[in-house]
Length: 93
Image (cartoon, rainbow, N blue to C red; front, top):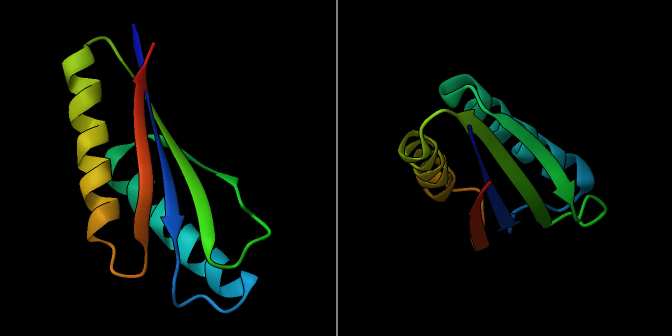
């Protein structure tokens, strides 16, 4: 069994309030969950209106499959025009 995690530090430039931040983050989380059937959590910087930390987790029998799913999630996040990725890390257990 392989557990893959992707941690992304995001900048939400156009967000002027926590409500704006929440709208962008929840929309992104919902799209990731619906498309890839993975777990997604907003785990950091929740009191800053222009920053967010998302962690995505996938469990699989195959390490290559987990890597492929996380890479696709990463591409989706990068393609989101409302956010800018500052940092990302992938880990496998």
